[in-house]
Amino acid sequence: MPEDKPAEVLNNGASLGVVVTEITGEADGILSFELRADNDIPLPEWRAGAHIDVILPNGVIRQYSLCGNPDDRNRWRIGVLRKTDGRGGSQYMHEHVAKGDRLRVSRPRNHFGLVEAARYLFVAGGIGITPILPMLDALERRGKSFTLLYGGRSRDTMAFVTELETFGDKVALVPQDEAGLLDIAGYLGRPEAGTVAYVCGPGPLVDAVERHCADWSIGMLHQERFAPKAKPVIEAGAFEVELSQSGKRLYVPPSESLLSVLQDAGCEIDNSCTAGICGTCLVRVLSGDPDHQDDVLSDEERASGEVMLVCVSRSNSDLLVLDL
Amino acid sequence: MVNVRNVRGGDGLASIRDEVDDILESVIENTRQATEDFFESYGENPDPRILSAWIEPRAWREIDYVFLLNEQIRRYGMQFSRKHITLLAKQSFQEAEHYEMVGEVIESLGGTVPKSVPPQAKPWSDFLWDCLERHPLAAIAAWNVSETSASGSFEPTFKAGEKFGFDAVVKVYKKIAIDEKFHVGLGVQILSDYAKTDHDREEILRAMRGMRDLAWKTFTPASVKANI
View 1 (cartoon, rainbow over the protein chains, first blue to last red):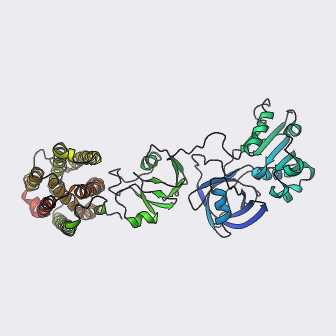
View 2: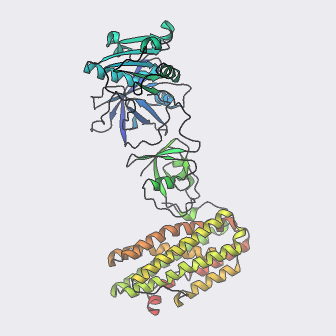
View 3: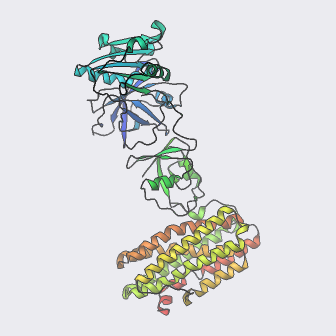
């Protein structure tokens, strides 16, 4: 799943601590990161098509598809394309995340799971191969019929090619500089009973597949985009807050105080003035960049970024993680 | 922990800050000592009526603050920012809530909620109303000392609550303790923002010194005993 998909407003999955145990160059501009739990507890289960939120140390959240082996509960793998025109998440992953680093991630979620079918047609573009790769593994083990049409700008930019080649002629690699654009119509053809199609990749590719499949029955086409179709969910002045003790993630709209959002979610927080004077709603900040609006914290307390008064203060980062 | 006396505001108190801090520290200590003395004597005869008599002047303080705050806003409010008018009004509402809560506790102990100023609270009340007449900041300065003094009573009260099992009193005092932080912080901010002249500061100090000598006296064992 693409990194520029906006953070879904609320993810109720608990967050986990993981360690980066391996970083591998998979293609030009694409790294894979192997993640293991930072304790001895097996990682949560997931199925092909699932993704996780990665909460970067700078407070930014990005979504990445899991592209390893779902049966291996000891390690996860994600693939990250470095995007110079993105919002900085992939650049951070490429430039600042190193082997041995600890990251916080969500539990896996899956909006792109495999459905039961007699035959599967996959179309992937660029980094869109990541959720599809474990799908192919799963279907291969089950002896299912499938094919993949995988496009990229050039062969050097196409990730996981060696693994894909193990599927033989079920997989067609189409580097654009050698073979031109993907022949969507020729590949997908007419809808056939028992056949489903999956597409993941950049917006124009998904659009092209959607146009081709416009008259297919509902449920025959499954798609996942790199970028949101609509405008981003996060409004100006809004931010997300994660409660570290429960893993709840909450959306704070621009017109509502963080205190009121927390109270609505069931948090019991002392408060009195709701004006940043009394200091009774002090909360510890575990990550993110608080935007202090109070009248009582000292300069040192503000600069530390470790505490905030949730009645009036907000966030400079997309995400705040609070010790609640 | 946040120190509300460090609230951001103007520099109106800067030149008298040391004396202001001394007054506030001494009134906290005097109130703490008076409260500990009261509960020591209460332990000799833990009669709910005695506890009620100890709380009754506090009930009057709460409702008198409502009257004072509203008069403060009516008389001087237009000299303050809208934010400060709103926050003074919020403080007034919270004082009314405290009167309600403390009143319920008094009734549960078999006491009577005061509807006029109790004799032991009269010097305190008279002094505050006199301050209100004298200067726009004087009453705020006086009740800032009185509100600050309360922080000296909370810990001994909570300890005594555990010892003698008066949970309802402790619950109410814990709520009041939270709001007192706001009231103290707001008072310091207003005094810092609006004190501009030496005369303003003289009136603030006069009010604070006067309240320092009054705030704790109604909570001593002798005061309680004299009014049972």
